[in-house]
Amino acid sequence: MDILILLIPLSLVVVGIIAWVMLWAARSGQFDDLEGPGHSVIMDDDSPPKDDAPRS
View 1: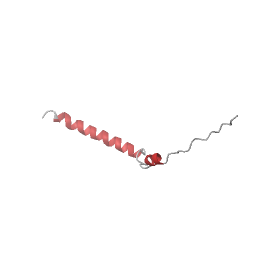
View 2: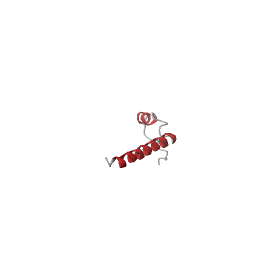
View 3: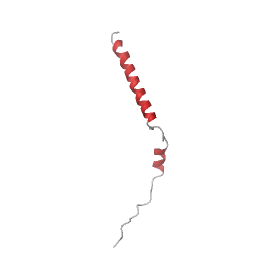
View 4: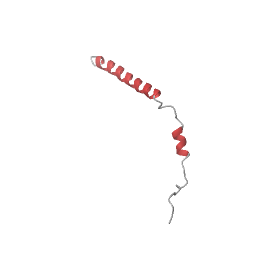
């Protein structure tokens, strides 16, 4: 039972850190565009790159 004196405060600290990280991520815009990366995989560019150098 003595270990509960250590584990309960330790678990509250871990929960606080997790809550702080989630709030930081939400405020910094990490969850703003959830569909963009999925669409960028589908909308890839299959055409070959244009060569701007003159040929001699």
